[in-house]
Structures are given as C-alpha cells and as structure tokens.
Image 1 (cartoon, rainbow, N blue to C red):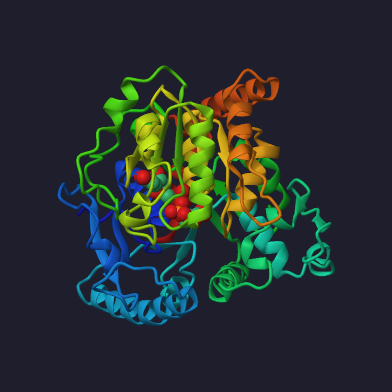
Image 2: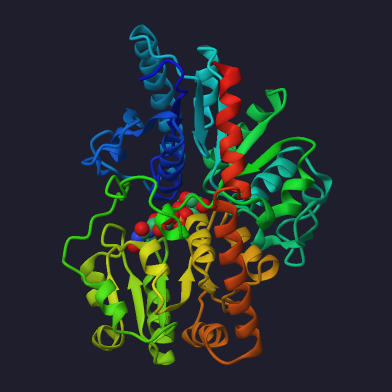
Length: 467
Ligand code: UDX
C-alpha cells in the first residue's frame, strides 16, 4: 500500500440492514483510492461472501459474544449489552495489534448502533466519523428528543391525539415516531445506543455525520439541524450497477447473510410478467409477522388477482412447516411466487415490478425510491414508522396500511391500498409520478458531479488533514 493512501477502519452493526449500506460505502471509498478494513461481528462476517477479494478491501471482526452462531437474539437488551462489552474489548485488542504491526488508521468510520466504537477510538487518539444509515430525519428526531425538546417531552405520548412539530419535519403523530419512544419500550438498550450517539457528537468540535440519504431528499431536515451537526448526504448506498452507473467493483463480493437453499428462478418468472404488474412483498431481514397477519396478507394479495413475489424467510420464526399451514397455500403458489430470499435491488429494478409492500426498513425504502417503485407501507418498529410517514407525506411515493381495532391489517385494506397505488386512481397516478421523479433525483445525486458524489469526495479530501 502506498504511504499516501488513506486507511479507514469501517465498523458496522452485524445485521443485513447495516452491512449492506456499509459495504457499498466501502466500495465507493476504494474506487477513489482509500484502503478500507471492513469490520463487523465474527458471527456475521463468516457468512459474507469474500471469495472475490477486492483490491483495497480487507476484513476484520470483533466479538459480539455470539461468535459461532449468527443470531440477533430475541433478548435485544442482552444482545446490545454484550455487543458493547465484548465488542469494545476485542476492538481494543485489534487496534493495539494493528498499531504494533505499523497500521495507523487515518479515521475510524462507525455506523448506527455501535457508538462504543467511538469511545474506544478515542483511547487510541484515532479520529472518528459517524456513518448514519437511517434517514437524516431520524437523527434530527433523536437530537431533539435527547436534548429535551419541549414539544416532545412535555406532551403525553400515550394520548392518541399526540402530535409534535419538530423543526424540518412534517407534523408527527405517535406512530410516526421511532418505536423506542413509545412505552412500554422493550428495547431500552437500543434507545440508549441512540442517546450515546448524540452524546458523542456533542463532544466533537464541529460534528459532521455522513448520512445514507441525498441532500435534496431531506433538505429541510438537514437544514433544521445544521447549527448543531453538519449532515452530509452520500447516498443512495446501493450497488452502483442499479443506479444506472457502471459497477464500481465486483458485486460477487457480497454481504448476504441469508442463503437461498433451493434453486428459485424469480428473475425468469419476473421476465414472464407484464410491465409494472407484479407486487413485491418483503419485510427485510429481521421483522416477523404473526400467523393471523400472514393469513390476512395472503388474502389481500389473492384478492387483487395480481401476480406477486413474496419473500418469507426460512430462518425466522416462520419455519417452513408453518408456511405450509397457510390456508390458501396452493392458490398462493398459483398466482405468485414465494421465495426465502432474493436479490432485492435486482428485483426492484425489474420493469415488471409495480409496487412494493414493505416494512419500510431504511434500505428497502431507499432501494424502492431509487428504483421508482411505489410503496404500500407496513412499518413494524424502530425507524420504520417515520420512514413510512416520509414516504406517504413528504415524498408522496406510497401509502400506509391502516390496522383495525385488534391491531391487524385486514386483507381488504391491503387490497384497497394496492389497488390505489397500482390502479387507475388519481392518487395512484400522482404516486407513480412522484416515484419517477425521486428515482431521477436519486440517480442525479449519485452521478459524477452529483451532490452525494461530491460530498463523498470532499470527505476523502478532508482525510488528508487527519494524516
Ligand atoms: C434494519 C431495520 O429494521 C431498519 O429499519 C433500519 O433502517 C436498518 O436496519 P431490516 O429490517 O433488515 O434492517 O430492513 P432494511 O433496512 O430494509 O434492510 C434489509 C436489506 O436486506 C435490504 O438492503 C434488502 O435489499 C436486503 N434484502 C431483503 C435482500 O437482499 N433480499 C431479501 O430477500 C430481503
């Protein structure tokens, strides 16, 4: 490695929704001459495909206490405590060994949910930068919440008429806020991790955060927080091949933690369908729907009479036997295709996909936006309620499903929203028009000379001052 080449250690939380954007960030950096060591928990890194090593990319791992089994345990509080404890200790050892070997990291970039990385980096006097892989709006909300913004703190969040105006954001109801704010919060340690992020940024002189967004997408949210933190859009962090640009690096060096065990031919199946006719359904890598909800979803999809591609992971609680138990399994397989995992960005960029029923994880939301695919949103937890609000009311590229009094989204509601988004309704037409607009703007931001491209290059130039 040449002496002048910046050396970044990129540390990410070990889940699919964090590894995907981080890996894309790493690939962008190496394409402009930065050497990157990509680090996540041993349990996850062993599952990643590293068979086509990229020049300039190395791998390393810390321990989350579960080195031999990739499992974000049901007890998220225990997990978050363990990853902090074991992660800090093993990162410390890794940095000490790296220094002994003569490797001096120019900067440690750490991602959402691993704020303890910054604490350890400071012990070694290594500069840090946060890579925030949720929308800028979420960092804005967390900032105001932990700073005791009166609008949020003084109101009763349990009041069904709760509404809050946070600078730079649309008026938010209770279900538009991060789920960790709503009692009873069973993910206290995750909320504390977000609090730690704010505390760490507050200790910096001119905090600058790289965000997986692009400037015009969240212009107001970014501006509203500008006097505290400089938020820099460097997204969309999805493979460049799907941004209408040539591949930056081998895509075979991938980060899929879920393996497809059978030979599924979803791309061929999609090829056989008319343009914009297919409903794509997926709830990301963590969320699991209860059986009665799965039944309603199946009913709604069948009732539309439209073809669908539905991802039902086999590694979650919905084991294959349970799936066989879906009452209309045979009809489902006649009208659609069910797969345990797929290449989502590839599916979303296929011309026959006309709508995405999504949990609104930030990656899924952004991938849909970049592909110009309208959404029917079914948020589950964490940032997804806010992401859904932005989709429906800020970017106007989708519509949110409404639950009944028992907390279930009924089949007829699913059908109603799908028909609105995919059918001849005026609102559907507006949604599809907006989806095309944001697709173009996202690609523009990522292009040579676009805002995200320029922001990323400026970040790399700024590393020079750290060496
Ligand atoms: C989590 C949180 O839930 C999310 O809200 C947060 O913003 C990031 O971390 P997850 O629930 O897995 O992530 O959802 P999402 O952010 O959408 O990430 C899932 C990733 O898996 C996406 O990049 C998607 O393309 C990929 N995926 C999903 C596949 O490649 N194939 C699939 O079949 C399903």
